[in-house]
Structures are given as C-alpha cells and as structure tokens.
Length: 453
Image (cartoon, rainbow, N blue to C red; front, side, top):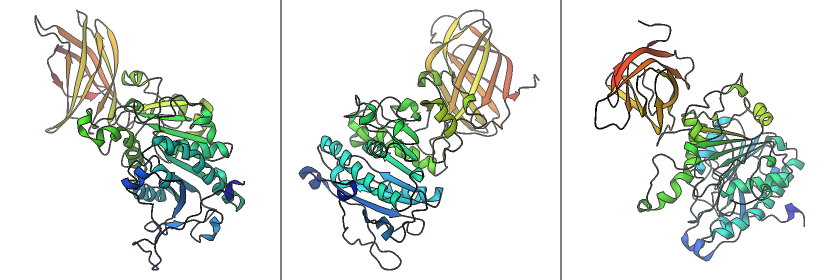
C-alpha cells in the first residue's frame, strides 16, 4: 500500500478559539490521564501556522496539502515533532516555539500532533508508534514534493522521542531532507540501537543535536553533524538533585533542551559551543579556539547554521561544549585566564575569581580539579561568570589549598591575563607581580595588557 494511502486523515472538533474571519481554529489534541491509562491508538494531525495565522492553527489535509490556502509550498517548511506524552496534555512550549520559528523567516510551521499514540502510560507502545507516524509524515512530505516543494527546504525539529521519529522520516527519504534538529533525543530503548534504528547524521543533509540529560531520559553519544552538550550533556544547573522534588526531578534536565533552544531562537542568549573531546577538557581551558571554523567564529546554538554548515560537513561529526546558568538568559560570561606562578614551594589548589563593578560582584569557582602551582608554571583556566559586570573595576582572586594548619605559604603570580571569549572586541586585561597567601583573597585593579604601571 502506498505511504500516502496509509495516512490517518482527521477532522478536529471545533475549537473555542476562532480566527479573525470567525472560522474555528484547529488546536493541538488535548487528552488527560484517563486516555493514557486506557491507551491511545495513533492518529496523526498536521497543524499549520504562518505569519498570517500565528494565533489560529489550520489543519492540513494529508493527501491534498495545497488545498489549504495558507500553505505556500514555495516557502521553507519547519515541522515540529513532540515526543512521549505520559499525561496527554499539550506541550507547554508549542505556541512559543511556533512564534519564534515564524520570526526567523517567512515559513510554514507545521506542528505534527501525534498525541494520540504518544499518550500512553506504556512508553514501549509510544516507541512502536514512532515508525508508523514516520511513515505518515514521510507520505505527506512526498506529496509536498510532488506538488512542487523542495526537500532541501524542509526542516524537522524533533523533541526527545520526536527526534528519532524525525530521523526515521529522513531515512525514509534517503537523507534528502535539508535539516533535522534533535532536542535531547530519547535514550530509553535507543541506547544500544544501530544508526538505522535512531537519529543519525545520514538522515538529513545537516543534523544538529542538543544534549541535556544523557544520564537519564536522553541518549548518550554523538548523533549529528554537530552535537551540543550543555553543561556536559547531563545534569543541568538549577534542576533538583533528589527525588523529593517530585516530577521536576525526572523531567527538568530533559526539558532544559527545549528551553535552551527557545532562548537561542529568541536571541536573548548566545550559547557558544567549543569543539572538544570532553567536557572535562573544556573546563580545563584546553578547547577555547575554533580555527577550523574561521573566518566564522565558534558555532552558536540556534536556527541559522549557514556560517558553519560547510566546515561541519567537512569535519564530520563534531562535539561542542558549553556551560549555562540555572535560569534565563542561561548564558555565562567566559574568560580564558592565563597565570604564571613563581612560588618557592609546590602547592596544589582550586581557584576562585571575583569581578567587581561598583558594589556588585560575580564569582567563578574553578574547583572541578586541583591545579599545580610551582616555580615558573604556566596555568590556563576557564573562568565562567553568571553575570556580565561592566566595567570591571576590581578583580579579586583566592587560591584554596586546603591547608588549615601550619604556616600559610606565599604564592607569587608573575602575570595573570584575562582574555574575554564571548566579547572578543573587549581588550585583554592583565596584572603583573602579585604576592598572595594561600587561602587568602587578594584584590587588584586590572590594567591593559600593554601596561605594567
């Protein structure tokens, strides 16, 4: 049977919400726990939003997409594909994502509503439905192509289980889709899957993936041309660490991928990824350059990847890492800090740095490892601050060695240099010949690096 003959064509019930012309809007399927307990069978609906109807979805006929007058096949099309819905409620982020996508460019935004199918208490049933839903969506996109749409202008954005669904669609179309974005692809049932059984780079001309919960509901590894790992791709700042927090303990890290993506689309946070072999190496300051992407800068999470697509396709699979704060706008201010020490006795310690502006300050705790401090040793650190305080009027530094008894040893810094990573137009700031005691804070006024006064 042909794919487009297998599609479920649905007619949604009238909504309370109406368009300007008085015509009822088509809304995302809203279910509840009783549906999930009883189980739902797959039923795929496609809801169209454009700049002309952002507040009022229009359901598209699967077999005749051009019959929907707002659906312009000459425009790019972005398909938003949700994941597992154990409560049956619509995703809270749908409306926000639709609006932000429409702001990027004039496009068709199509919400793939497979809530009937995804809403099952039995996760394994929802996983099984992803293949059938992918066949449905594949048939629709093939019909689009037959009616004049270009596959290279199709962008699938899949969330969790929806990321693998998007990958199945891409594989069905032999990787001819322009782009797939996977937001924390689901891990359960896919951990040991082969590339044919999950999202992988061959599913589209360009695949970008964001990881936020690899140690629980997300999938470990690299599965795109570029994989972004927020805070290492696992535990996210601000998320509960104990089960006593209730539902949030289970979903917070996994959902953070969507909130980071929304923030990136909204351009309120610029989240730069640094190519590196591991998050530990990134935190050690070993991966703070992006020569392979020049003349472009390091890759930035978001919608427009035109600057980085060519080098990424040339490099193959690339892993990039970044850190965030616990809340909006998520962005950390990063400095590369280079120190040259000249203390007489070998000391090991962690470093605390504060930037002061007026009465305000922000602190970076570089405490993930002990640093070796001895005579004429160059040490590079990555200092990440939660706030961007300007102008920096004072810097204070403390080196904690853990020594609580006995004399405090002197630590001499021949030079300390701060290189702003996120704001390269800002000048480098330095200080020379600082004498300090271990475990004691010392403050100084930063100077331009070409000055020793």
